[in-house]
Structures are given as structure tokens and as C-alpha cells.
Picture: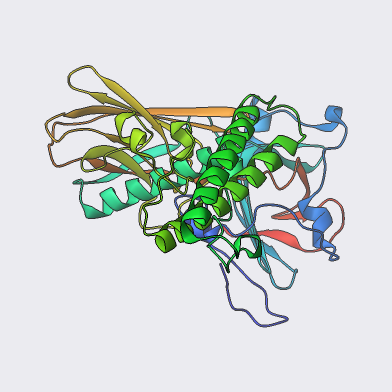
Length: 407
């Protein structure tokens, strides 16, 4: 969030802005990784934990509770140019803190303690009892859903094919070039005969290279078998181009059959052989379906690993993941009523789940999911210590500035 303040002017931010920044606003979170700054504010943000024995207890006794009630409130950072920060201390021992400096936005929440004249913030903890997901508007399954599901599936197939069939990635077959000088004294029919034999020989070599490639130990970093398969593919492709040219010159039809490939490879293959139509390949018909869309109309986070389980009224359960393009769909006919959606996010060693029961609605095929992105925030500090000075909280490391009581 750019506040657009000139040099020498203090910046301020309302905690309500912080809430908007932290929840359901992925386009506002530009960077949550601390970078090296030469300014003294770095030591304030990155203040590490001191001796564990110095950490106070959460308000418990009447004296502690009275102190907590006195300290509880909203504070704004003053005295640090071009920096906006606000801190909210709650009497129940929770805190929320936000800081914006330059192009860096930081946020933290958790428990605060007080002891020996200090307020200690941290460590950063996202409340596990807080729902991570919220269900938004629902939509029918339309053209946009079909196109998006198809695009998602294409990315999935491409990624899988690149992993399973890497020798097919990048580069096509050679186009036919000029005449081969070694065949200048041959008739078109003779050249065609030689081209047929060459294509069959190089096809056999390509098949052997493919077999060796799929039989390899995938844990071995040696890529020589991939290189061999790629080279054999290139050579066979050139032979096919020569065969096609010689067949045209001889007035014949060039006939050849690509080597057999696993269904996962069809996505990258230059040829889709006739036998592929008789096999169950990885392609999915997306004419109708149900799904979730994470933060629809906003820029999705393609790295999120959100598992969705769709429970239908007939008792069936279908699963999908939203890690590609921020949505997860499964094929389903229009007369198959969706009953419930279960969502699970796995992030940074934690797991957060929600289940939503749905009212019967034949038009509600796609459901927008709101994600509380605070769960994704990297903690900006382990602990932040502030000296209590009246209604002011002063950074304990002496880096400058103070948090001024605002209410």
C-alpha cells in the first residue's frame, strides 16, 4: 500500500486498514520476507528473543490484569520518518501489529506479555481457532468455468508430461531440407525406398531409447538416457521429413507409425497415434462440473496447496487441489447435487480445515472461497520488546521512535 507521503513526513495507518491489508487482500501483500536494510529500524523489527526467563506471564492475577487493562489500547509509531506502524494491545493478552516502510509491508499477531517494565510481543501466532476459509458467492457452471478448468487441466497435463516424458519437451522434428547429395544418382523411387528403410531403422532405435528412458532409475541425476532419447527422437523426426519429401517426389504415400508412448506423454507428443483413441488418456471433458475458486476476480496464488473434497447428495465424494491457478474443479453432471465442500490448507507445517454444508441449489455449481491470508504470513520477528514509558512504548533496542497511545 503506497501512502504517497513526501520525505520528512510521518506516516500513519489505522488498524482497520491493517485488517483489510491482512485479510482477503492478496494484491496488497507485496513482500513478507525481511530484506536487509541499512536503516536502524531493522533492529526494531527483527528484535530477537532475549533470555526466556525474562519473559513475563500473561495477565492472570488481579495486579497483572490491572496492568494489562491499563496498557491495553491502540498505539501509533511516531518519530520514524517514512514509516507507518500501529500496535493494538488487547486486555486478554492478544496483540496485532502492522508496519509499512518503503515497499515493505509487515504484519504480526499473537500474545503479548509484560514484565520488568517492558511489553513483549511475540512470537507471531495465527489463532488456530480462527476460520481460515469463508464461503462467498456461488455461480453456475458457464463458459468461463469451462475455459478455466480446461486451462487448469492443460497446465496439470503439461507439468506431468514434462516430468514423465522430458525427452519430448522443447523442439519439434526437423523439416525436410535440400536434396541429400548421396542420393543424387538415384531415381525418385530408389530414394523413396531408401527413406522407408531409414525411417524404420531410426524408429527402432528411437523405440529402444524410449524403453531405456522409462526403465531408468529416476532417483539417479544422470540424464544421459534422456539425452539419448531426445537425440533418437530428433533423428527419427528427420527421417520422417525425408520420407515425406521422397514420397511426394515418387508419387507415393508416406506411411509410418510413431512409437508407442504412455498416455501421459500424449500432451507433448508431436503425433497423436490412432491407437490413442482406444485408450483411456488423461483428457477430461469439462462441459459440466462443480468446483471452488479461491479469491475469484483477484490474482490467484498458484502455489497454495488447498485440497477440496466435494460431497454429493448421492453419497459420492470427489477430490481436487487448487494449487494451480487458484481453483479446483471436478467433472459432475448438472443433475448431481452438491451437498458439502471440505477444504484443507497445508502450510508451513500447519493444517487448517473447514467444512461447509450447502443448501440444495442446482445453479450453485462453483463457490467462491475467501482465504484469510494472515495464515500465510512469515513472522517478521520472534519477539519485539518495548519499554513502558507512561503512555508511550519505546523500542528497547534504542533504535528510535515510540508508540504513542491513541485511545
